[in-house]
Image 1 (cartoon, rainbow, N blue to C red):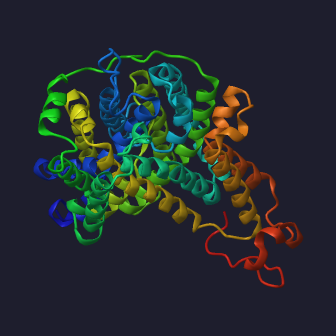
Image 2 (spheres, one colour):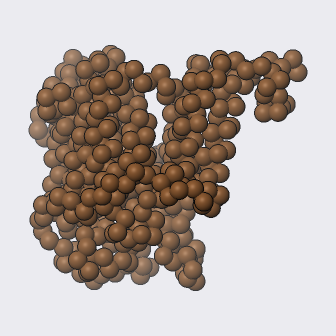
Image 3 (cartoon, one colour):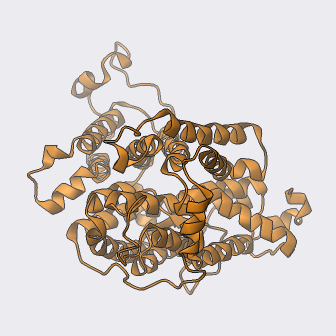
Length: 481
Protein backbone atom coordinates (compact mmCIF):
# COMPACT_ATOMS: atom_id res chain seq x y z
CA UNK A 1 0.00 0.00 0.00
CA UNK A 2 1.63 3.22 -1.17
CA UNK A 3 1.35 6.48 0.71
CA UNK A 4 0.00 8.27 -2.38
CA UNK A 5 -3.09 6.03 -2.33
CA UNK A 6 -3.82 6.96 1.30
CA UNK A 7 -3.88 10.76 1.23
CA UNK A 8 -2.17 13.94 0.12
CA UNK A 9 1.35 14.80 1.26
CA UNK A 10 -0.01 17.33 3.74
CA UNK A 11 -2.52 14.84 5.16
CA UNK A 12 0.12 12.14 5.58
CA UNK A 13 2.24 14.47 7.76
CA UNK A 14 -0.73 15.29 10.01
CA UNK A 15 -1.04 13.10 13.17
CA UNK A 16 -4.76 13.93 13.32
CA UNK A 17 -5.51 12.73 9.78
CA UNK A 18 -7.68 9.62 9.56
CA UNK A 19 -7.34 7.54 6.37
CA UNK A 20 -10.33 5.62 5.06
CA UNK A 21 -11.05 2.64 7.32
CA UNK A 22 -10.31 0.00 4.68
CA UNK A 23 -6.83 1.52 4.40
CA UNK A 24 -6.30 2.37 8.06
CA UNK A 25 -7.03 -1.13 9.41
CA UNK A 26 -4.30 -2.93 7.38
CA UNK A 27 -1.85 -0.18 8.34
CA UNK A 28 -2.72 -0.62 12.02
CA UNK A 29 -2.32 -4.39 11.87
CA UNK A 30 1.01 -3.85 10.10
CA UNK A 31 2.22 -1.97 13.18
CA UNK A 32 1.14 -4.90 15.38
CA UNK A 33 2.95 -7.43 13.19
CA UNK A 34 6.13 -5.36 13.38
CA UNK A 35 6.24 -5.52 17.18
CA UNK A 36 4.22 -8.61 18.13
CA UNK A 37 7.01 -11.12 18.78
CA UNK A 38 9.23 -8.55 20.50
CA UNK A 39 6.32 -7.58 22.72
CA UNK A 40 5.51 -11.05 24.11
CA UNK A 41 9.09 -12.37 24.31
CA UNK A 42 10.07 -10.62 27.60
CA UNK A 43 7.12 -12.25 29.42
CA UNK A 44 8.19 -15.67 28.10
CA UNK A 45 11.79 -15.07 29.21
CA UNK A 46 10.87 -13.89 32.71
CA UNK A 47 8.36 -16.73 33.22
CA UNK A 48 11.01 -19.20 32.11
CA UNK A 49 13.69 -17.66 34.33
CA UNK A 50 11.38 -17.79 37.34
CA UNK A 51 10.57 -21.43 36.63
CA UNK A 52 6.97 -21.40 35.45
CA UNK A 53 7.46 -21.06 31.71
CA UNK A 54 7.54 -23.91 29.19
CA UNK A 55 6.65 -27.22 30.79
CA UNK A 56 5.64 -25.69 34.12
CA UNK A 57 2.52 -26.74 35.99
CA UNK A 58 2.01 -23.37 37.68
CA UNK A 59 -1.33 -22.93 35.97
CA UNK A 60 -2.49 -26.32 37.20
CA UNK A 61 -1.56 -25.29 40.74
CA UNK A 62 -3.83 -22.26 40.56
CA UNK A 63 -1.15 -19.65 39.80
CA UNK A 64 -1.46 -17.40 36.75
CA UNK A 65 1.25 -18.82 34.48
CA UNK A 66 3.15 -17.79 31.39
CA UNK A 67 -0.08 -17.65 29.39
CA UNK A 68 -1.41 -14.93 31.69
CA UNK A 69 1.83 -12.91 31.46
CA UNK A 70 1.75 -13.11 27.66
CA UNK A 71 -1.89 -12.00 27.75
CA UNK A 72 -0.96 -8.98 29.91
CA UNK A 73 1.87 -8.10 27.54
CA UNK A 74 -0.59 -7.72 24.68
CA UNK A 75 -3.31 -6.03 26.71
CA UNK A 76 -1.15 -3.36 28.33
CA UNK A 77 0.92 -2.71 25.23
CA UNK A 78 -2.39 -1.75 23.65
CA UNK A 79 -3.51 0.33 26.62
CA UNK A 80 -0.15 2.13 26.89
CA UNK A 81 -0.30 2.82 23.14
CA UNK A 82 -3.71 4.44 23.62
CA UNK A 83 -2.15 6.64 26.30
CA UNK A 84 0.21 7.88 23.58
CA UNK A 85 -2.14 8.19 20.62
CA UNK A 86 -5.34 9.42 22.29
CA UNK A 87 -3.82 10.93 25.42
CA UNK A 88 -5.26 11.74 28.81
CA UNK A 89 -4.62 15.26 30.09
CA UNK A 90 -0.85 15.85 30.10
CA UNK A 91 -0.26 12.13 29.50
CA UNK A 92 0.53 11.17 25.91
CA UNK A 93 2.28 12.72 22.95
CA UNK A 94 -0.77 12.45 20.64
CA UNK A 95 1.58 10.92 18.08
CA UNK A 96 1.65 7.49 16.37
CA UNK A 97 3.86 5.92 19.07
CA UNK A 98 3.56 2.16 19.57
CA UNK A 99 4.25 0.96 23.12
CA UNK A 100 5.37 -2.54 24.00
CA UNK A 101 7.10 -4.62 26.66
CA UNK A 102 10.67 -3.44 27.07
CA UNK A 103 13.76 -5.62 26.56
CA UNK A 104 15.82 -3.07 28.51
CA UNK A 105 14.56 -4.25 31.90
CA UNK A 106 15.17 -7.97 31.32
CA UNK A 107 18.78 -7.96 32.68
CA UNK A 108 17.39 -6.27 35.81
CA UNK A 109 14.46 -8.67 36.19
CA UNK A 110 16.25 -11.99 35.67
CA UNK A 111 18.42 -11.74 38.85
CA UNK A 112 15.29 -10.82 40.81
CA UNK A 113 13.33 -13.92 39.79
CA UNK A 114 15.88 -16.54 38.69
CA UNK A 115 14.73 -19.96 39.90
CA UNK A 116 12.48 -18.48 42.60
CA UNK A 117 9.11 -19.26 41.04
CA UNK A 118 5.99 -17.24 41.71
CA UNK A 119 7.34 -16.30 45.16
CA UNK A 120 9.64 -13.76 43.50
CA UNK A 121 6.87 -12.00 41.60
CA UNK A 122 5.37 -9.76 44.32
CA UNK A 123 8.71 -7.95 44.64
CA UNK A 124 9.13 -7.85 40.85
CA UNK A 125 5.76 -6.21 40.22
CA UNK A 126 6.23 -3.88 43.17
CA UNK A 127 9.34 -2.67 41.37
CA UNK A 128 7.45 -2.35 38.07
CA UNK A 129 4.74 -0.21 39.71
CA UNK A 130 7.05 2.11 41.65
CA UNK A 131 9.56 2.30 38.79
CA UNK A 132 6.73 3.25 36.43
CA UNK A 133 5.59 6.07 38.67
CA UNK A 134 9.18 7.31 38.93
CA UNK A 135 9.46 7.08 35.13
CA UNK A 136 6.36 9.29 34.79
CA UNK A 137 7.88 11.73 37.31
CA UNK A 138 10.90 12.09 35.00
CA UNK A 139 8.58 13.66 32.44
CA UNK A 140 8.60 16.86 34.48
CA UNK A 141 12.26 17.50 33.73
CA UNK A 142 13.20 15.05 30.96
CA UNK A 143 14.87 17.80 28.95
CA UNK A 144 17.30 18.55 31.77
CA UNK A 145 18.67 15.02 32.19
CA UNK A 146 19.43 14.27 28.55
CA UNK A 147 22.90 15.81 28.91
CA UNK A 148 23.87 12.96 31.26
CA UNK A 149 23.06 10.29 28.66
CA UNK A 150 25.01 11.01 25.47
CA UNK A 151 25.49 8.37 22.73
CA UNK A 152 28.52 7.01 24.59
CA UNK A 153 26.30 6.03 27.54
CA UNK A 154 23.11 5.07 25.71
CA UNK A 155 25.03 3.09 23.09
CA UNK A 156 26.89 1.21 25.82
CA UNK A 157 23.66 0.43 27.68
CA UNK A 158 21.83 -0.83 24.58
CA UNK A 159 24.85 -2.96 23.62
CA UNK A 160 24.98 -4.39 27.15
CA UNK A 161 21.26 -5.23 26.99
CA UNK A 162 21.82 -7.19 23.79
CA UNK A 163 24.91 -8.97 25.14
CA UNK A 164 22.98 -9.98 28.26
CA UNK A 165 20.24 -11.53 26.12
CA UNK A 166 22.15 -13.39 23.39
CA UNK A 167 22.83 -16.26 25.82
CA UNK A 168 19.08 -16.65 26.29
CA UNK A 169 18.58 -16.92 22.53
CA UNK A 170 21.19 -19.68 22.21
CA UNK A 171 19.76 -21.59 25.18
CA UNK A 172 16.26 -21.42 23.73
CA UNK A 173 17.45 -22.61 20.31
CA UNK A 174 19.26 -25.54 21.91
CA UNK A 175 16.21 -26.67 23.89
CA UNK A 176 15.69 -24.32 26.82
CA UNK A 177 17.18 -24.01 30.28
CA UNK A 178 15.14 -26.89 31.83
CA UNK A 179 16.65 -29.26 29.22
CA UNK A 180 20.31 -28.27 29.69
CA UNK A 181 21.22 -31.53 31.46
CA UNK A 182 19.28 -33.80 29.10
CA UNK A 183 20.59 -35.61 25.98
CA UNK A 184 18.16 -33.68 23.79
CA UNK A 185 19.73 -30.32 24.64
CA UNK A 186 21.63 -28.98 21.62
CA UNK A 187 20.39 -31.76 19.33
CA UNK A 188 20.30 -31.35 15.57
CA UNK A 189 16.50 -31.50 15.69
CA UNK A 190 16.34 -28.56 18.10
CA UNK A 191 18.78 -26.48 16.11
CA UNK A 192 17.07 -27.30 12.80
CA UNK A 193 13.85 -25.66 14.06
CA UNK A 194 15.72 -22.56 15.23
CA UNK A 195 17.81 -22.25 12.07
CA UNK A 196 14.75 -22.48 9.81
CA UNK A 197 13.31 -19.47 11.64
CA UNK A 198 16.58 -17.56 11.23
CA UNK A 199 16.88 -18.38 7.52
CA UNK A 200 13.27 -17.51 6.69
CA UNK A 201 13.55 -14.24 8.63
CA UNK A 202 16.75 -13.26 6.81
CA UNK A 203 15.29 -14.17 3.42
CA UNK A 204 12.22 -12.00 3.98
CA UNK A 205 14.21 -9.10 5.43
CA UNK A 206 16.53 -8.96 2.42
CA UNK A 207 14.40 -10.12 -0.51
CA UNK A 208 10.80 -9.22 0.37
CA UNK A 209 9.09 -5.84 0.43
CA UNK A 210 6.24 -4.19 2.28
CA UNK A 211 4.34 -6.12 4.92
CA UNK A 212 6.33 -9.33 4.30
CA UNK A 213 9.57 -7.59 5.23
CA UNK A 214 7.99 -5.80 8.20
CA UNK A 215 6.62 -9.03 9.67
CA UNK A 216 9.66 -11.18 8.81
CA UNK A 217 10.19 -12.48 12.36
CA UNK A 218 6.51 -13.35 12.80
CA UNK A 219 6.44 -15.25 9.50
CA UNK A 220 9.75 -16.95 10.32
CA UNK A 221 8.33 -18.23 13.61
CA UNK A 222 5.14 -19.40 11.87
CA UNK A 223 7.22 -21.38 9.34
CA UNK A 224 9.28 -22.82 12.20
CA UNK A 225 6.05 -23.70 14.01
CA UNK A 226 4.73 -25.68 11.03
CA UNK A 227 8.12 -27.38 10.69
CA UNK A 228 8.02 -28.39 14.38
CA UNK A 229 4.59 -29.98 13.80
CA UNK A 230 5.92 -31.88 10.76
CA UNK A 231 8.83 -33.39 12.74
CA UNK A 232 6.75 -34.16 15.84
CA UNK A 233 8.08 -31.51 18.23
CA UNK A 234 4.50 -30.42 18.82
CA UNK A 235 1.25 -32.07 17.80
CA UNK A 236 -2.10 -30.74 16.68
CA UNK A 237 -3.74 -32.56 19.59
CA UNK A 238 -1.48 -30.87 22.18
CA UNK A 239 -2.14 -27.46 20.61
CA UNK A 240 -5.89 -28.06 20.60
CA UNK A 241 -5.80 -29.24 24.23
CA UNK A 242 -3.85 -26.17 25.37
CA UNK A 243 -6.20 -23.76 23.59
CA UNK A 244 -9.37 -25.56 24.66
CA UNK A 245 -8.37 -25.36 28.34
CA UNK A 246 -8.13 -21.57 28.13
CA UNK A 247 -11.04 -19.19 28.49
CA UNK A 248 -12.49 -17.34 25.52
CA UNK A 249 -12.53 -14.08 27.45
CA UNK A 250 -10.94 -12.91 30.70
CA UNK A 251 -10.33 -9.57 32.39
CA UNK A 252 -7.00 -8.80 34.08
CA UNK A 253 -6.75 -9.29 37.84
CA UNK A 254 -5.24 -6.53 40.01
CA UNK A 255 -2.25 -7.60 42.13
CA UNK A 256 -2.69 -11.15 40.93
CA UNK A 257 0.84 -12.03 42.06
CA UNK A 258 0.70 -9.84 45.17
CA UNK A 259 2.72 -6.74 45.96
CA UNK A 260 5.94 -6.39 47.92
CA UNK A 261 8.45 -3.60 48.37
CA UNK A 262 11.96 -4.75 47.43
CA UNK A 263 14.74 -2.20 47.57
CA UNK A 264 16.74 -4.00 44.87
CA UNK A 265 13.74 -4.09 42.53
CA UNK A 266 12.79 -0.44 43.13
CA UNK A 267 16.35 0.84 42.67
CA UNK A 268 16.84 -1.27 39.55
CA UNK A 269 13.62 -0.19 37.85
CA UNK A 270 14.06 3.47 38.79
CA UNK A 271 17.61 3.60 37.43
CA UNK A 272 16.59 1.89 34.19
CA UNK A 273 13.75 4.41 33.88
CA UNK A 274 16.38 7.06 33.07
CA UNK A 275 17.65 5.03 30.11
CA UNK A 276 14.15 4.11 28.93
CA UNK A 277 13.01 7.73 29.06
CA UNK A 278 15.89 8.86 26.86
CA UNK A 279 15.11 6.02 24.44
CA UNK A 280 11.54 7.32 24.21
CA UNK A 281 12.78 10.86 23.53
CA UNK A 282 14.79 9.47 20.63
CA UNK A 283 11.78 7.59 19.27
CA UNK A 284 9.53 10.67 19.49
CA UNK A 285 12.15 12.72 17.65
CA UNK A 286 12.47 9.96 15.04
CA UNK A 287 8.72 9.91 14.45
CA UNK A 288 8.35 13.67 14.01
CA UNK A 289 11.42 13.87 11.76
CA UNK A 290 10.64 10.80 9.69
CA UNK A 291 6.89 11.31 9.44
CA UNK A 292 6.41 15.09 9.55
CA UNK A 293 9.86 16.53 8.79
CA UNK A 294 10.02 18.57 12.00
CA UNK A 295 11.49 18.50 15.51
CA UNK A 296 9.44 17.15 18.41
CA UNK A 297 8.01 19.79 20.74
CA UNK A 298 8.72 19.86 24.48
CA UNK A 299 5.05 19.10 25.13
CA UNK A 300 5.19 15.99 22.93
CA UNK A 301 8.37 14.74 24.62
CA UNK A 302 6.94 15.32 28.10
CA UNK A 303 3.62 13.70 27.21
CA UNK A 304 5.37 10.66 25.75
CA UNK A 305 7.46 10.24 28.92
CA UNK A 306 4.38 10.52 31.14
CA UNK A 307 2.64 7.86 29.03
CA UNK A 308 5.70 5.60 29.21
CA UNK A 309 5.71 5.75 32.99
CA UNK A 310 1.98 5.51 33.64
CA UNK A 311 1.67 2.70 31.10
CA UNK A 312 4.32 0.76 33.01
CA UNK A 313 2.74 1.48 36.40
CA UNK A 314 -0.74 0.37 35.31
CA UNK A 315 0.71 -2.78 33.74
CA UNK A 316 2.52 -3.58 37.01
CA UNK A 317 -0.75 -3.50 38.94
CA UNK A 318 -2.19 -6.28 36.76
CA UNK A 319 0.91 -8.46 36.29
CA UNK A 320 2.33 -6.80 33.17
CA UNK A 321 5.98 -5.90 32.57
CA UNK A 322 7.47 -2.43 31.88
CA UNK A 323 6.42 -0.70 28.68
CA UNK A 324 8.39 1.58 26.39
CA UNK A 325 8.13 3.01 22.87
CA UNK A 326 9.07 0.56 20.13
CA UNK A 327 11.76 1.75 17.75
CA UNK A 328 10.91 -0.69 14.93
CA UNK A 329 7.57 1.07 14.53
CA UNK A 330 9.36 4.41 14.19
CA UNK A 331 11.08 2.99 11.13
CA UNK A 332 7.75 1.71 9.84
CA UNK A 333 6.28 5.24 9.94
CA UNK A 334 9.24 6.55 7.96
CA UNK A 335 8.80 3.68 5.48
CA UNK A 336 5.03 4.08 4.93
CA UNK A 337 5.03 7.87 5.26
CA UNK A 338 1.78 7.72 7.25
CA UNK A 339 1.92 9.88 10.40
CA UNK A 340 -1.68 9.24 11.49
CA UNK A 341 -2.02 8.46 15.20
CA UNK A 342 -5.45 6.98 14.50
CA UNK A 343 -3.83 4.21 12.45
CA UNK A 344 -1.76 3.23 15.50
CA UNK A 345 -4.89 3.47 17.67
CA UNK A 346 -6.47 0.76 15.51
CA UNK A 347 -3.40 -1.42 16.08
CA UNK A 348 -3.69 -0.76 19.84
CA UNK A 349 -7.33 -1.88 19.85
CA UNK A 350 -6.30 -5.10 18.08
CA UNK A 351 -3.66 -5.74 20.80
CA UNK A 352 -6.22 -5.11 23.55
CA UNK A 353 -8.63 -7.56 21.92
CA UNK A 354 -5.90 -10.23 21.81
CA UNK A 355 -5.03 -9.50 25.44
CA UNK A 356 -8.61 -10.12 26.57
CA UNK A 357 -8.70 -13.55 24.88
CA UNK A 358 -6.55 -16.03 26.84
CA UNK A 359 -6.75 -18.52 23.98
CA UNK A 360 -4.32 -16.28 22.06
CA UNK A 361 -1.78 -16.49 24.89
CA UNK A 362 -2.35 -20.25 25.17
CA UNK A 363 -1.66 -20.65 21.45
CA UNK A 364 1.56 -18.64 21.73
CA UNK A 365 2.62 -20.87 24.63
CA UNK A 366 2.44 -23.95 22.38
CA UNK A 367 5.23 -22.61 20.17
CA UNK A 368 8.27 -24.83 20.86
CA UNK A 369 11.00 -23.01 22.71
CA UNK A 370 13.48 -23.92 19.95
CA UNK A 371 11.33 -22.11 17.37
CA UNK A 372 11.12 -19.06 19.60
CA UNK A 373 14.90 -19.30 20.04
CA UNK A 374 15.41 -18.76 16.32
CA UNK A 375 13.35 -15.58 16.50
CA UNK A 376 15.04 -14.16 19.57
CA UNK A 377 18.52 -14.86 18.19
CA UNK A 378 17.67 -12.42 15.41
CA UNK A 379 16.01 -9.89 17.74
CA UNK A 380 18.70 -9.88 20.40
CA UNK A 381 21.44 -9.66 17.80
CA UNK A 382 19.66 -6.61 16.42
CA UNK A 383 19.68 -5.05 19.89
CA UNK A 384 23.48 -5.38 19.97
CA UNK A 385 23.69 -3.99 16.45
CA UNK A 386 21.49 -1.03 17.45
CA UNK A 387 23.83 -0.27 20.36
CA UNK A 388 26.87 -0.40 18.10
CA UNK A 389 25.11 1.89 15.64
CA UNK A 390 24.54 4.42 18.45
CA UNK A 391 28.20 4.16 19.42
CA UNK A 392 29.17 5.14 15.88
CA UNK A 393 28.13 8.70 16.79
CA UNK A 394 30.82 8.85 19.49
CA UNK A 395 34.11 10.67 19.01
CA UNK A 396 36.49 7.85 19.95
CA UNK A 397 39.21 9.88 21.63
CA UNK A 398 41.18 8.52 24.57
CA UNK A 399 38.75 9.85 27.15
CA UNK A 400 35.76 8.08 25.66
CA UNK A 401 37.77 4.90 25.09
CA UNK A 402 38.68 4.77 28.77
CA UNK A 403 35.07 5.35 29.88
CA UNK A 404 33.78 2.66 27.54
CA UNK A 405 36.53 0.18 28.41
CA UNK A 406 36.10 0.39 32.18
CA UNK A 407 32.30 0.39 32.07
CA UNK A 408 32.09 -2.56 29.69
CA UNK A 409 34.77 -4.58 31.50
CA UNK A 410 33.14 -4.29 34.91
CA UNK A 411 29.54 -4.59 33.73
CA UNK A 412 30.08 -7.55 31.40
CA UNK A 413 32.48 -9.21 33.83
CA UNK A 414 29.97 -9.15 36.69
CA UNK A 415 27.31 -10.46 34.35
CA UNK A 416 29.49 -13.39 33.31
CA UNK A 417 30.63 -14.27 36.86
CA UNK A 418 27.96 -13.33 39.43
CA UNK A 419 29.81 -15.20 42.19
CA UNK A 420 32.50 -12.51 42.13
CA UNK A 421 30.25 -10.40 44.37
CA UNK A 422 28.51 -13.19 46.29
CA UNK A 423 29.44 -11.69 49.68
CA UNK A 424 27.76 -8.34 49.06
CA UNK A 425 24.41 -7.63 50.75
CA UNK A 426 21.51 -9.16 48.81
CA UNK A 427 20.17 -5.87 47.43
CA UNK A 428 23.55 -4.69 46.18
CA UNK A 429 24.46 -8.14 44.86
CA UNK A 430 21.31 -8.34 42.72
CA UNK A 431 21.93 -4.88 41.28
CA UNK A 432 25.60 -5.59 40.57
CA UNK A 433 25.09 -8.98 38.93
CA UNK A 434 22.71 -7.46 36.39
CA UNK A 435 25.88 -6.05 34.82
CA UNK A 436 23.81 -3.42 33.09
CA UNK A 437 23.35 -1.08 36.06
CA UNK A 438 27.02 -0.95 37.16
CA UNK A 439 28.09 -0.39 33.54
CA UNK A 440 25.55 2.43 33.07
CA UNK A 441 26.36 4.11 36.39
CA UNK A 442 30.11 3.98 35.80
CA UNK A 443 29.72 5.39 32.29
CA UNK A 444 27.41 8.21 33.48
CA UNK A 445 29.64 9.21 36.39
CA UNK A 446 32.90 9.07 34.44
CA UNK A 447 31.37 11.01 31.55
CA UNK A 448 30.32 13.76 33.95
CA UNK A 449 33.51 14.01 36.04
CA UNK A 450 36.40 13.26 33.68
CA UNK A 451 37.92 16.20 31.78
CA UNK A 452 37.16 16.43 28.09
CA UNK A 453 40.67 15.26 27.20
CA UNK A 454 42.97 12.98 29.16
CA UNK A 455 46.73 13.26 28.83
CA UNK A 456 48.53 10.83 26.55
CA UNK A 457 50.43 9.40 29.52
CA UNK A 458 47.19 8.62 31.35
CA UNK A 459 45.87 6.40 28.56
CA UNK A 460 48.84 5.01 26.72
CA UNK A 461 48.20 1.56 28.17
CA UNK A 462 44.66 1.66 26.79
CA UNK A 463 45.27 3.19 23.39
CA UNK A 464 48.46 1.22 22.67
CA UNK A 465 49.17 0.94 18.98
CA UNK A 466 45.78 2.35 17.99
CA UNK A 467 46.97 5.94 18.38
CA UNK A 468 49.60 7.64 16.28
CA UNK A 469 53.24 7.68 17.40
CA UNK A 470 52.90 11.29 18.44
CA UNK A 471 50.17 10.28 20.91
CA UNK A 472 47.38 11.99 18.96
CA UNK A 473 43.87 10.73 19.62
CA UNK A 474 42.08 8.48 17.20
CA UNK A 475 40.42 10.16 14.28
CA UNK A 476 36.85 11.12 15.25
CA UNK A 477 34.13 9.04 13.62
CA UNK A 478 31.20 11.13 14.69
CA UNK A 479 30.02 13.88 16.96
CA UNK A 480 31.39 14.37 20.46
CA UNK A 481 29.70 12.18 23.06
